[in-house]
Structure formats: structure tokens, C-alpha cells
Length: 396
Ligand SMILES: *Cc1c(COP(=O)(O)O)cnc(C)c1O
Image 1 (tube, rainbow, N blue to C red):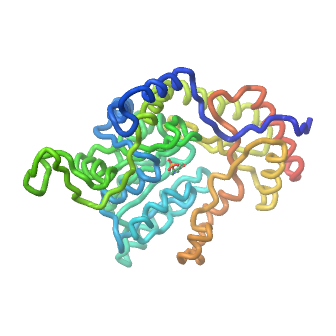
Image 2 (image 1 turned 90 degrees about the vertical axis):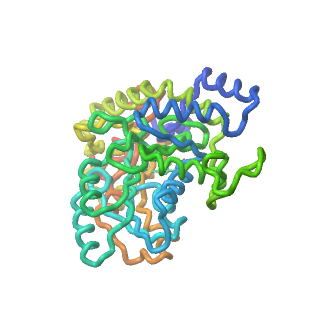
Image 3 (image 1 turned 135 degrees about the horizontal axis):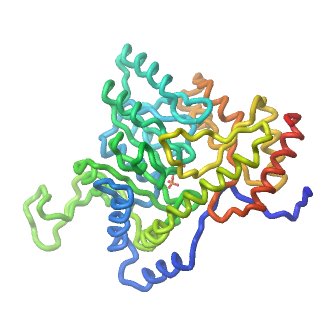
């Protein structure tokens, strides 16, 4: 059975239809390739789908995070907190703005920010006058953090919230779409191919605050204002545009936007299929000493990732199982190695940091494949491979 010829199954992958291809082809034959009518239409589609007031399309979620921080005027000496169990971009954005970064430990069962740890860290920070200006929360695997509680703490201690929903577009929290910003100042999505819907590369920022929205739109395109009503100088003629802030070229283009619009039409299908696969895994793995990360009752998860924890495994056994899965051509992945353990972060002074839950989580969990189009025979192959790997590590 351990057949080397068996195809590699990645942990996630895009799903492109003939319709998607036709939509892109149409734009390629049109007048607009860069930011044009399709970008505006994609933003409008997202506003309607999410039920939020404003949306700004950009060229990646990394750019979205950077602009969201700048719109909140994050700068040197401001304190920003985020989760250590995330992709590095959730933390890097604070460093782009020269802010002081710190990490809040996670819940060891979910990998998402631990409310108790957040509370006690806030209380300590208050005592030494080092409260954060901003908290970036991460909806790991597409499952929302407990935003209501986090928002209550934000009101109490006075910090902004950005939701990193790179994994989570299409999911719900307390009956509202993630990204509706009921409990946050801004929210960002990623359209990287491995995420829920793709534009190739791309991202989006949503908010209900028009002042933030205007800043985002200015910053995404060099800080240049083209609206005559908003000029700071006197109107100098029809050529007139003016740079008012230091911005970037973080624009999405129409080729990407039209693909995003086409993909968005199938998002509900994608997510229900992910939920079906998750439930099949739940049944099929029932006799193994593993547990799929739980989903709270008030959450409909987009299930970007199917993360399992291995019961009572050592760090060494975790590695053995992981390697054994890879050797059977199953594309398991670790989501994530704590950000602060990366050499760059260690060099910044995080050498002394040890977040017990985050490190425990990283040594006992990994993602198994989940994506629309994953077949039942592949799911069976994955579960069989997992059984073998657990046996090999002496855990079954
Ligand atoms: C993928 C990802 C990002 C970055 O997304 P890009 O669109 O590739 O820039 C940021 N945060 C998280 C949690 C991610 O998974």
C-alpha cells in the first residue's frame, strides 16, 4: 500500500472553473487591465456579500494589513499585539510601521487568542502604562475568535482591533458574516490561491468607518488624491492631482478582480463542501487518538484548514508522524510555528519569550488536506496514512 506512485495530496489548493477563465479572458480583451471597473465591482460585490459599508481591494493581504495599520496611524512607540500562531504577515505589518510588537498566548485547544491570557496581559500592561494601541486577531483555520469578548476588552482598555480573516471569508460569527466589522475597526481578507477564493494574489480591507476607508484608498495608490473637492492646493487645471501622504502602489488589477468576482459566486458551495469534508474526517478518524480542532456553536467556519491535534504526543512523536505522512505523499503542514521563534524575530529581542500554549500547540497539531474537490477515496487514503503514522510513532 505504501506506493510511491500515489499522487501527492496538498493541504489546500485553488478551484478554477471554465467560467473563471472566460471572465479573465474577457478582461484581457477589454480596455482596462489595471485598477478599473472590475475592481470597483468586486468591492461592491464584497460589500453586498459581507454586509459591511466599505471595501478596498489591494494586491495582497500583506498590503491590506500594512495599510490598515497606517490608516490607524500606527507608528514608532505605539504598541501592537497579535497572535504567535499565524502567518508572519500578521506580525510584520506592525514592524513596517516601526511599532513595538508583542504576542498574546493562544488557547492550547484552538490555536486562537486566549481570552484569559489577553485579560491578564492587559491588566499587567495597564499597571506599567504599556497598553496596546492595536490588537490584530487571527481567525485561524477560518474559525472566528470570540470577538464579542475581545471587543468588550477593547472598550475597557481602549485599543483598536484589526481582524486578520485571511482564512475566514464566507464564515459567520453570531449570525453575521466575518468581515462585517461589528466587533472591530477593520478586517482583512486574502485571495492567495491556497485560501477560500482566489485572485492569484490579492487582498481586501473592509470597514464601516468612512474616515478609515478614505485613508486606505489614498494610501493604496501613492497617497495621491484625484478628487477636486479634496485638494489641499488651489485647483490648478484639468491635469491636477496631488500627493498628500506617502502611499504605495498596492492596487489590485482588473484581471485579478474579475477572477475574484467569478470565484465569489461559488463561495457558499466551496464552504459547504469544506464543512462536509470536515464532518467526514470527524467520523472516519473517530477511532484514532486525534481530534479535529473544535468549532464553537456560534461560529460557521469557512474551514480553510482541517487541523488535528494528536492526543498525548511528545514533540518527537509529532515530528515522526508528520514525516511519515509526508513520506506517504500526504501534504500535511504546520499552521503555525510560533512567529517569534523565527530567526528574524529572535534577532529583534524575542529570545526570552516563551508562550507555553503556542509552543505546545505547534508541537501537537498539524493540518491535513481539505479543499473543494478532495475526493472520498483521497480522504480514506489520508486517514489510512494517519493510522499508519500513529502506529509508527507508537501511539496506536
Ligand atoms: C495568507 C495569510 C496572510 C497573507 O496573505 P497574502 O495575501 O499572501 O499576503 C496573512 N495572514 C494570514 C493569517 C494568512 O494566512
